[in-house]
Image (tube, rainbow, N blue to C red; front, side, top):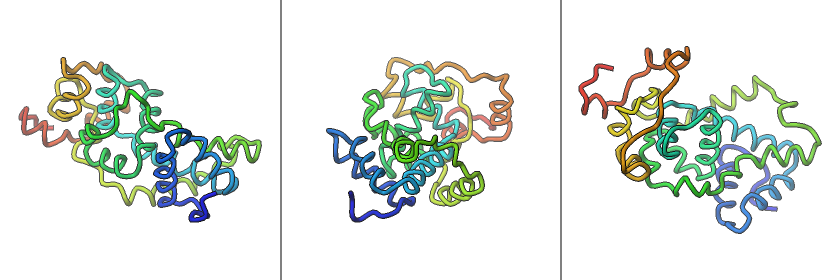
Length: 218
């Protein structure tokens, strides 16, 4: 067990992710062992934080980046997998991506799914320790308070809440497109009949990069 960590909070969460990354031969197994040693309460805390960071990453601009990195679109389940991969890259990569998804150009290649299991180790450890599914002990008020606390450290980038179509993607994510789709951008299309997508289009602002390049008013 790591003697330096006795409880899981937002700082030790990222520290555990970073230490697991240093064990490429078995990072998820190592993290599982640490959380098992810390006990069910801390394993659940790890899972709550991972889930909260996943929820806080639910931004259409970041989903657009995932679609580029997937080389042709990203389903709902695919985006959840992407968020898990993003968290597993560590705090610096995660925070940078929410400030500017194009920064993922500098991240490890998405195709190798490096460390993507790490955010799920809290859930697995909790179930192993208690015989219960982690959702059975979900506390909505506590979880909402955790999300509010974690959100205070996040700087959301310009235009990250907008669901971009293919015509805007190259202007919004130029470096990412060059890395993952150099032959041309084709990310599929949003469901414009979705109330959620329609609301985002009506209320969110496009990135200033697109306004500059295309002269759009929104």
